[in-house]
Amino acid sequence: MKKIVIILAFSLGFTSLHAQTENTSNDYNKWSIELGGGVNKPQRPMTSGYFTSTPSPWVGDFGVRYMFNNKFGLKADFGYNSFTAKNNSIDFDSKYYRIDLQAVANLGRIMNFETWTNTFGLLAHAGFGVAQLENKDYHVKDRMGNFIAGVTGQVRLSNRVALTGDFSTILNADQNLNFDGTYIGENRGFSGLLFNGTIGVNVYLGKNTKHADWTVLSENVDLTAYDNKLAELEAQIKNIPSKQVIVEKPVNNTVVENKDVMKEMINDKYYSVYFDFNKSTPIENSTAAIDVVLTYLRKNPSASLDIIGYADQVGRSEYNEKLSNTRATNVKTIFEKAGIASSRLNVVAAGADTSIQKDSEEARRLARRVTFKVK
Image 1 (cartoon, rainbow, N blue to C red):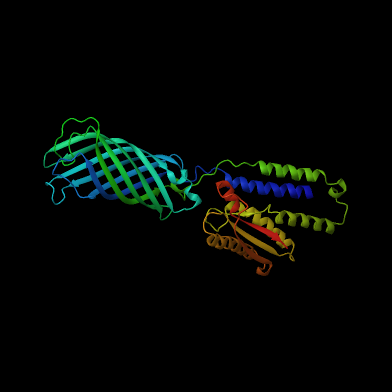
Image 2 (cartoon, helix red, strand yellow):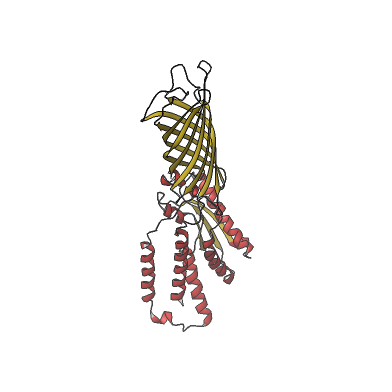
């Protein structure tokens, strides 16, 4: 019986760990719409006597983006620029239109922003397209190719909307008109230079809760330590004398022995409740551990329980202390609603778990937990 209890307990803990680290690549949205508006500065070419304000209104941008995963994607976007004369400039009014296909890199995930924030993000984008510069007063149009590159800062307002701020540089190839609309002749190099700055929003589309921009994917976890622990447990079981395995004592004594085994397993942290980053609600796969501890408390009405909350080492110590307390308190509430008297339950806020390394995302997942100690 003792062998069965130990193996089942370890298997339950192992299953819970595996569920946490499973790659959830299909559990996030991939499509988004981008809207932005702001200012620009046409750097060159400009005819002498013609110039714009620094910066100069206006810029408009509309894009549709698709992420292949949480780090890389593609977007197609349409842009509009207006170039008008500053007070002391010769009067002119030019318009610039472009369509681009760009690669997108989520620097926030590549640089592991999740280790210090879940609110701020950073995207990089670059690509090629076609553009047209026109001036209706001069009745001229100039079609050209362009290369665009930029960075986009993000502030997540909700799972559906993020505020953005973008700075982009555009290089025009084969630009035969100055930005003011006057003709400069054939020019096949990347002679045009334009800067854009916009503020806008990302609107995330899809049925899932999060978008790829804010999703942290698990990687394969080295489970060597757990395999070794299982081998160690099996070795210990094999060394137990046969007379201890065979139940020759009264039924009541056997029950007491099993209670001790379960208490030992609970206190050795084989049953833990895990949490997502910066969350105080247990993940769904942790309910099995709660059920085991709850069953033990019901069968042992004289037992009391320390509920020990932990956080990972990301963030300020004061915040982690508060978060660990909230996690433990929420688990206590679950036990109380299941009929366990509050007097039997004691919340312990342990703060950040410094025994688990800070630099590994998978290790931090193990740190965000609640453990138990039966007394």
